[in-house]
Amino acid sequence: MDALVMAGGRGSRLKMGEKPMVRLFGRSLIDYVVLALEESCIDRIFISTTENVPATRQWALDRELSVVETGSYGYVADMIEAVQKACVKDPIMVIMADLPLVTSDLIDGIIEKYEERPEPALSTHTPLELHSLLGRRPDSLFNYQGQLIVPAGINVLNGADIEKEQEDYHLILKRIELAVNVNVAEDLLLCEKIMQGDFL
Picture (cartoon, rainbow, N blue to C red):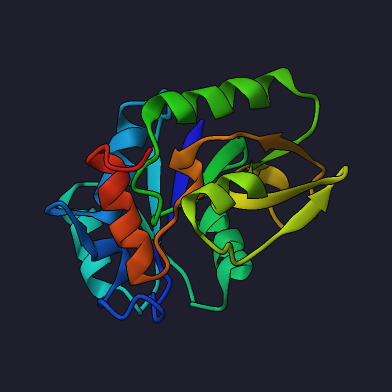
């Protein structure tokens, strides 16, 4: 399976320049995500960029990663364009560049679950209670079969049908690594605490 890292957003709420290049303990956010993908069973890694992130694009090129430039039309439109430009027809993992706590084992586990399921797509979520424990207020919230869940920013989609709505299996994981994506400065501080083992 290939992976597409969505890294073209402005990161305006964080107010620290290009969000994928924001530093966490001396490394960029996107570096953590790419390293986890490289250590997983993922084959090729594509980085989706826009005109908003020239430094991110250069970083990816310096790492000899495949870069697909999209038109900055919004997350879904850019994702569709990126998958089409990458010419991926098989299932592909789409992952946000602002998930620095993600691990290769977690990525492999998501792929393993996808391969067990009959649905053409898979979406990952965390329970709202986990965000409450972390003191976070999530951007999006869904009621799924009576449980309040938060999208985690990792999905598997069928590349051949990327323009179509795909039935997805909701994988709900109570994992801190999926619960903290970096949108604001407080998220960055929370990542630091978790990585230092200061958060119980």
